[in-house]
Length: 204
Image: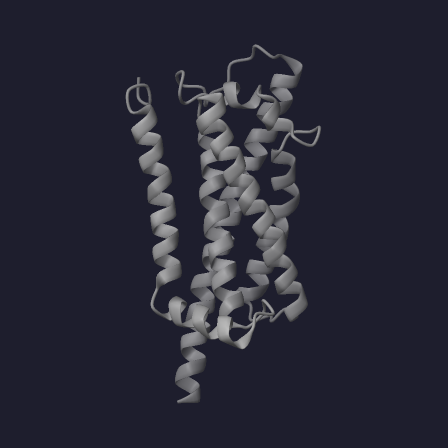
C-alpha cells in the first residue's frame, strides 16, 4: 500500500512541477518580449509593435499606459526576475528535491502577490485602458497555472501552516478536484468577459 501511495505521489509531482515548468517558461518568454517592446517604445513612443493588431488587440496601447510601469520600470522586468526562480524550483521538484516547509510557504506567499498583481493588470487593461495585450494575457494564464499548481502541492504537503481543521478541509476539496474546477472556471470567466465586452472589435 505504501508503494502504491508513493507512486501516486510521484506521478502527482510530475504533473504539478511539469505544469509549473511549462507555464513559467511561457511567462518568461512573454516577459522577455514585453521587455524588448518596452525598450522600443521608450526609444520611439510611436513605434509599431507586431502584436498591435487592431484597437482591441493592441500591445502598444497597454504599454503606453502608466500602469505598465507601476514601480518606475516596465512590469515585465519583474517576470524576468521571478520566472527563473519558478523554473529552478520546478526542475528541482521534478528531480525529487524536497524544499523546506518555510521556503515553500514563502514561495506561495510571494507567488500569491504575483497572482494578484497579474489580475490587477488584466482588469486595468480590460476596464480602464480598453485594449488587450496577447503577451500579457499569456502571463495571466501562466501565472494562474503556476499559482494553482503550487497551491495544490503545498496543501497536500502541509506547507502552509494551516490549522488541522482547515488543512483537512482543503485536502478533501482538492481530492474531489475542486481546485482544478476553480482554475477552469476562473480562466473560462476571463475568456467570457473578453468575448462579451470586445466581441465586435476583437477580430476586426
